[in-house]
Image (cartoon, rainbow, N blue to C red; front, side):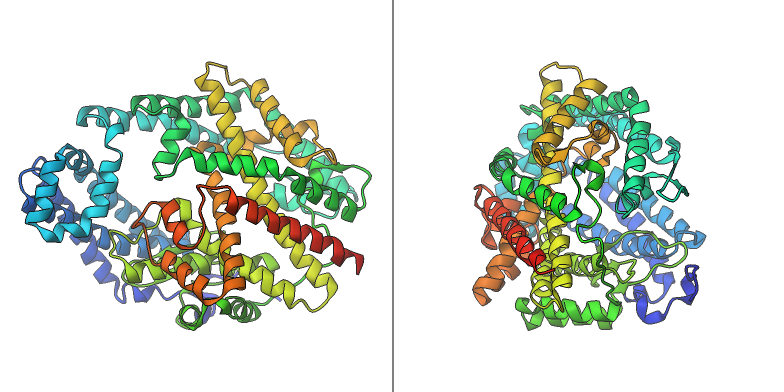
Length: 601
């Protein structure tokens, strides 16, 4: 067996994606890149004229739609070609060229939103009556105008855009220090062998069965972060101050309100999440108690969080077995759903295995008038099976939306983006648990689900609570120092993990290494999406066809309504605590089941 990664041209063709479905000849890509630049120039000719007539507005919107269609194709092709082999200079060049074309188009279309905002309601209504074809863009125009009260004059918008580059400096500095400049020491394992630490290696090392290694690596890793505590605090303070500056400029009451309004979501949704999580914290504490018992330790420490609760069992699943498992697990979604999944497998929508130079991780990338694609780095683990169905969920959401909606209305918002992927994961969990070959396998699968639940529902909510508390501190004039941030984070860690966990002093510096704290209140959406997915999967398994039909309607709706209204189509109302409470009840049931199963081990 070869230890080295295969080169790209050594990977079996059937395990690679067929990007020729986008362009069977790269000369067509070149022509479409030219077309993008032509359309960008054409867009520029409408500047200052959108309010002149309904005909001019319609022509501009049509041109913008056509431009986005070509950009979607050309960028999709170039970025996936580069991702399959990042060392390929030809595709690096194609990616850079299409990004330049995109920036050029954005610059020449920048007037669109301010001018659409400047048209009076009466004039716009008259335009809709004069040109019925404008109704195709009614949702898009409405989305632009929804934020009218928070938009500024063209000159002020340009000033804010310029300031945005400066506001991005904190995130850029964080990335440079965290990924490029920060160096970690080596530590010794229980056998005295050297293990080099890095950001990428930290979690795998924390999953080691060697507890001495977990402890020493934990202390050394966070000790390194603590050495730069004042720098991390200054960068985070800059990030928060930038948010507050823009929120005030746009006349919002808080930075949090400004962030969620961009997704057309009420702050009350996040408030409900916090309330439900705190009301159900006993379940998280039960999980911690169970972990302590199964690991057989007198004291459970933060360096015991990532290691499997069942250290003596593992399972391998080949890609062929994973495909079969996915088809069985997703069967409740109906034949039409499964037929598209089969098409993805048979017609090479998926780039399956790792090769030299290939981008890490996994994703689903949609090309509107072709089909979705998926990038994997499949390596026969249980995690890889769940990743396969997760990305398939994204792809099916994209497929249904693209089939039902125009390119103008197909692109669903981030708030609902993780729902379909996680629904697939929950369906897979139930199928694999119910069809486990033995007690050990069943316990292993439940352990995977519990860890996913803990990592998504509780950990991401804790992150969001830290972000919100610290922003509120800054808005109240409380300085964000290394010590004040440390105290907030350590206190939250103690609340979330409970009395059976030793919240080691070093964990108070974990906030320094979380990149999501520079994503402007992003992480709560992981938790709400997870809760929605658990509720949807539960309905599908219990109610069958009616729930499946409503779910597919949700999948087909793109961005035609605000995200919370879209989820109501699938039977989930995030304006109430019910979906969160329901999901947390499932977590409690899984703990009950794990406690019963381990008695049989």
